[in-house]
Image 1 (cartoon, rainbow, N blue to C red):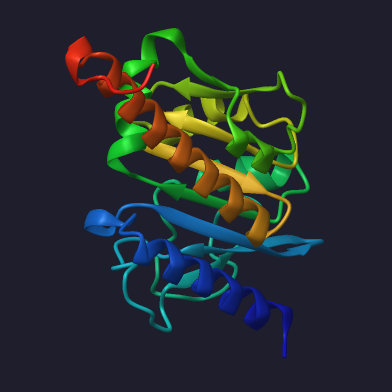
Image 2: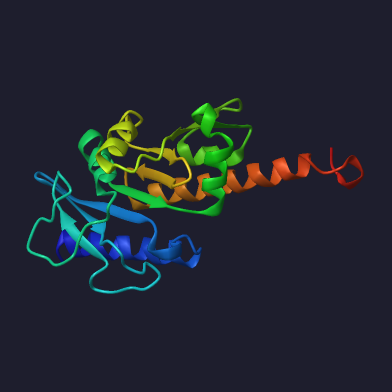
Length: 213
C-alpha cells in the first residue's frame, strides 16, 4: 500500500470523527496531512465538498506551493496556503481547520487583545504543558479576505511543529507532528473554548443562582 493511500485513509478517518462532532457546517473547514518531505507533497480537502460524507474526491495531492501535484478537476481548499506555511516552516505532519460556534465566539470576545490565555486547566496538557502553573496562549489574528495576506499574518505564529491559531470570527487552525497529535490539540482547544464561554455565562448569573463559589 502506497504512503499516499495510507495517509488518505488516515485523514479520511479524522474527517469522519470531526464530522460526527458536527464541526463542518456548510462545507466549512479544511484538513491536510503530509505525504512526503522531498519533494513536499500533502493531501488537502477539495473545495466545496460536503465533509460529512466520505467519497473518492474528498482530497487531492498538492505541492509545496499548494498547487495540484497532478492532473485533476478538483480545486484545493481556498485556505490551502495556511497549510503550506505550516509544512514549509515546520516538521508538522497534519493540519486541521474547523469553524465552530465556540471558537468563533471566543475569537470575538478576545479579538481586541489578540490572544486568549488559559491557565489552571487540565486540558492544556494536550500541548505538552505539564507544569502546575503552565499557561496556553492561542493567538487571534484578523480575518483577512485576501488569502495570501491571511497566510502571511498566520505565518508569524507558525514556529513549532505543533500549535494553534484562531482567526477572528472564522475558525481555528491547529497543527501537530501527526494526525493523532493535531486532533488531540483541536479537541482540547474546543473543550477550553466551550468551558470559557460557559464559565463567563455562569459569572453573570445573579448570586442566588450560583450554587458553587
